[in-house]
Amino acid sequence: MKTRLAVAVIALMVASGCGVVGGGDADTAAPAPVAATPSDVPTSTELLEEPTEEPTAEPSPTPSKTKPKKPKPSATTPTEDPFNFQLPECAELVGKAVSKAKAKAALNAAAAKTYWPGSAPTLKVPADLVRSVAWHESGWTSNIENCDGGFGLMQVMPDTEAFINQRFEKSYDFRDYRQNAIIGANQLAWLTKYFGEKYFKKKYDLSTSKCASDSSPCLLNLVIDGYNMGYGETEAAFLNNKKLSNPDYVHLIRANMRDCDCDRY
Image 1: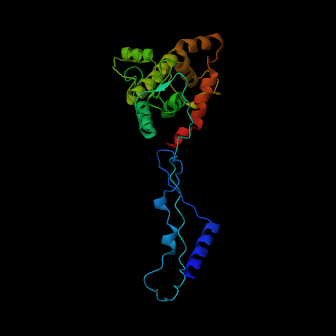
Image 2 (image 1 turned 180 degrees about the horizontal axis):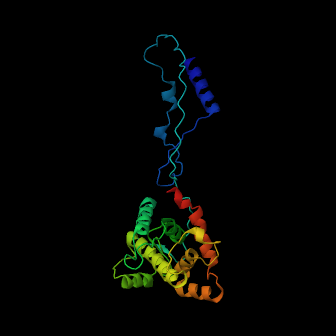
Image 3 (image 1 turned 135 degrees about the vertical axis):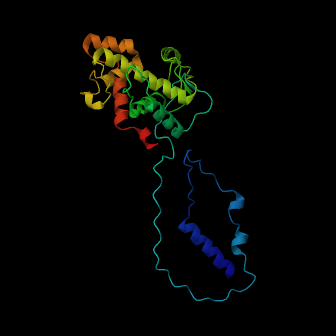
């Protein structure tokens, strides 16, 4: 009889169904489910084994009136990268990438620097501009080397590294993710100084409020355009018809500044 009852209990458990909830790592995607090994599943012999002693009857416990606690909401940090950054076919990853948290800290630190302490000490590069450019350029991937020679968070080109080092008497290495962020931010600062001095009466305000739209030739948009196209192409388009040389790129960066998946980190 006990054997029949045990089999009936097993049948009811199978019919009702049961599942296993797996936890996810905060920094990596959840692994694919793995089938349970024989050691994980109790055998029918273990389920049907009779106790060595007859259990004594005990009074049924009084139901608890305590309400079950509600689970706490999960942390806001995404469990996987919300930005599905696709490597170009000719790009490759070199070495190990740093975490998104370290990348963000490096970009913010680069934005906080003063790049023109003598001639333009009040010139500042907004942190959201630096983060947005880096997010579009690399998805905050610190070890990506593109087919055109761009490398790292800010996709710094070798000639940009050489120019910044020569112009500001530095020895930055664009393969170091912190220095890569600094070179990119320094380039944005140089473009701000160049266009601000020549066309905006030495005013270096990169506020979005100074721009009528994403495509208007305000200082912020010229700086973004120049980062992508080079200051020469940007200046030529501005002088020719007061337009941007690559308005699509500028719009993407401006959109990131308004609402970026990177803000979740």
